[in-house]
Image (cartoon, rainbow, N blue to C red; front, top):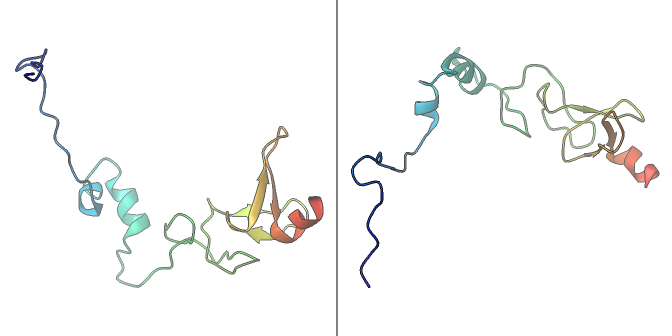
Length: 110
């Protein structure tokens, strides 16, 4: 059985797979922000967040596993106020506000 013909003929654009890597992203619409977050322009080595691999903007570390965290990935425990990463915290979204519990406090809540 022959293949079915293309209903769009020559009017359809070519669909090619394109690999988008760091070089292409650094030239795009968010080039300045991407370059500032991912590549350290000063030449010094920067510490990456353990959750999202962005450059860490402070000295925040997880209270449980002591991994470096950026401001976006920090979860403050509702019970004791400790800082925890996404792997060491339990987030409860059932209420109106989101509650995060560190591994130590989550053990007592269960």
